[in-house]
Amino acid sequence: MQQQSNIPQTKPIILVDIDDTLNVFSKVYWAIHNQAFEDNVHPDNVNQWDLDLFSNRGLEAYQLFKIPGLFRHIPVKEHAQTFIEDLQDIGEVYMVSDVPRGTSYGEIVEFQNINYPIQHAHSNPADDKRAWIKEHFPNFPKENVIFCSCKWMIYGDILIDDKPNTFIEFQKRGRDVILIDMLYNRHIDTKWRARDLQEAKEMVVELLAAKENVICNL
Ligand SMILES: [Mg+2]
Image 1 (cartoon, rainbow, N blue to C red):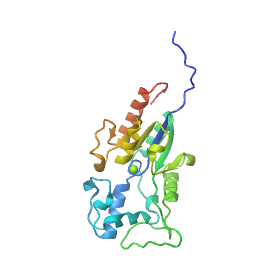
Image 2 (cartoon, protein in one colour; image 1 turned 180 degrees about the vertical axis):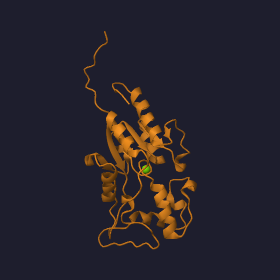
Image 3 (cartoon, rainbow, N blue to C red; image 1 turned 90 degrees about the vertical axis):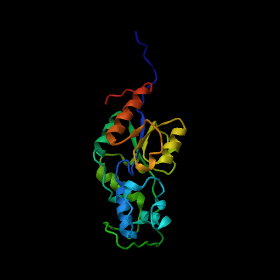
Image 4 (tube, rainbow, N blue to C red; image 1 turned 30 degrees about the horizontal axis):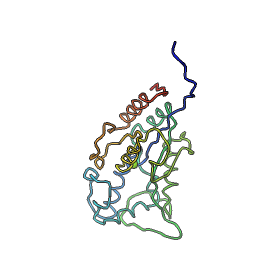
């Protein structure tokens, strides 16, 4: 007879990045960048993480993060909603995302030549991201959103992310992380590289199935 474990089973905690994991941030960013700075950078040529290396304005490229509403209007990736719902069936899902500083205390950053639906005088990337989540994932619990730069400090069983440094730091601590394939993270050699969200979901299932005391029914 099989021995029953008295250890209560808890749902695994799955952390999911937002920019370029659930949305198409890079595509939107470079389109705006090229308009604002009359440049011609194609996202398909951006093979390193640091944007300033590819911009004709160098570090000024990061000023574009202060465009009011930038993070509010980025298109969601295809099947992202189903992806999150499927993960919620098998785990406790948290969206984890970094947020740049917006503008406040009377600071106004003006950009010329930008065709983007600017709706506010000042930018607030955290509120923009919360509103974006509410629009595209209306049933996602607002308590399960964590804004943080050092995602490897967040407790969780699996992280899904595209940023090279985040992948390395999370993995370095012996934890499972799935890398969303982007040109700027191709230097990382891993079997946990997902070309799309469907593949990422399959990897989550595979990783969880390998863990003890986790039942996976996907
Ligand atoms: Mg990202």
